[in-house]
Amino acid sequence: MTMTRDEIKTLLDSQEIEFRRVAIDAVVMSFPIYADLFFSAFQKDDAFAVQMADAARQWMPVLRDGYDESVIPFDGSVQYTSFGTMAASYSVFLQEMHNYLAGLDKPTAQKTINTLWHHFPGLRIDLKGKTVNPKPEEHRQLMVFVTGNCNLHCPYCFSKELKRASISKTDMTRVLSWAQRQHVQSLLPCGGEPLLYENMDWLIREVEQRGMKMYFATNLSVPLPQIIMNGDTDCIEQLHVHLTNELFHNERLMSTFLNNLRLCRENGIDIILRGNIFGDDTEEHYNEWFRIAKAHGINALNVAFTIPSHTGSNSFVHIEAIQAMIPRLKRILEQGREDNIRVSLAKPLPLCVFPEDLATDILLHDMNAAFCNVYEDEGMHNLSLSTDLRFSPCLGVDEPSVPFADDLNWENLRSIFGPAVHEMQSRPLLDRCSNCFLYDRRLCQGSCLSYKQDSRKGGVRCAD
Ligand code: SF4
Ligand code: SF4
Image (tube, rainbow, N blue to C red; front, side):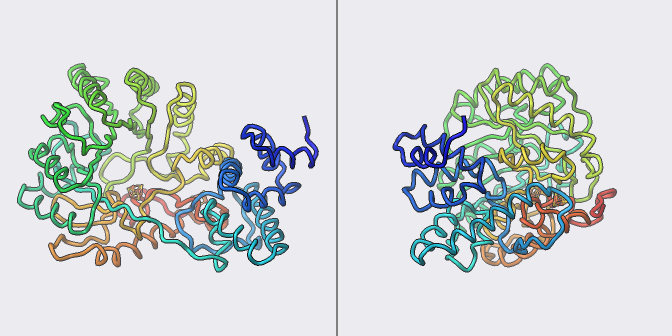
């Protein structure tokens, strides 16, 4: 049923949230006609603005956060050869926004701008100069490669390249004291298989006593540390549990895995499953991923195409090979929808390899495929420390690299890693990025930075 403008206005003024929803959907779906009603929502009460903002973000992914605000402002002069439909509708949106703001008195315009700034990070570059930029709250975390040991050594993993078997208790104590002085809130042990770190019970207790939290990735197919088994700690917030192929070929491993999974669930640890797509995975494996998720009441699955290690000697998916693997990804996304399990993509992918409708769907459903959070906290969000005690911006990027020192501080590292991460993230992955709307809006970083580092990783192509 088509509503008249007056009917829509009446419903927008209603106190009934459901009535408002119907009117909001009508406004968003016919945006150019009702642009004034859309923008006036951001002068009303907070609940109304939130409702309109939610609907708008579902409709137009570019209103969401991009990874960087220093982009070339959209001016319509560039001929976008990809994602043209999105570029065209965004151009209309911006035009309407500027027209609307120009017709308001100064205080009302300022209030509207502030509210739009708050609700739509993707608009901030277009509103710049019209409002202040509030500094986002920082969450400091540190990933520490505690051991290179693993019971599996999957072909796509980085563990074979780690320089030392593991970090001694003495060194780890120095690292923990440093982290505490730098106000690190979360510690992420990494490997290898972190559960095989010989000091894991001690490490968990230390992290807890120092007031930090922990989360980490594990294959969960080795005996659990006592402290986890006994449910004797609440500092582990989350586990990212890797569904390795070996599990499906080895009954003993699978039985340990399932038992551990059950114990962790019983002890209230939040679990996200992780599946890797790299070539040897099959349809039967995907069925197993979902079967395990459903059997254990887990509703989140992260999926990644495996990335190149620092030397590129692992088994990883080349940029050119991604397209051929899209049917696998589609199959997983469909299964996730059927089973009501949220599937996210763990690493950024070049969205132009997907058909445009799938790329838009990925953006709309916030699947994290377009960019990663390595840029947050000025390049420090995924700070990593290797087994030979060298800092780098994240596990996929080993340069720049800074040796650990007790008197080094967070700001020293930030001044080195911030510009380096920014440069890598802004660097186009492919020649065609310069004509791509998503690149212009910084809605696609192209790929995990491990592909962009340099050409040591044979076969990684950074121009099309
Ligand atoms: S660049 Fe670093 S943080 Fe981003 S996806 Fe790659 S490994 Fe992860
Ligand atoms: S920014 Fe580059 S990699 Fe991303 S979709 Fe556009 S052309 Fe592809």
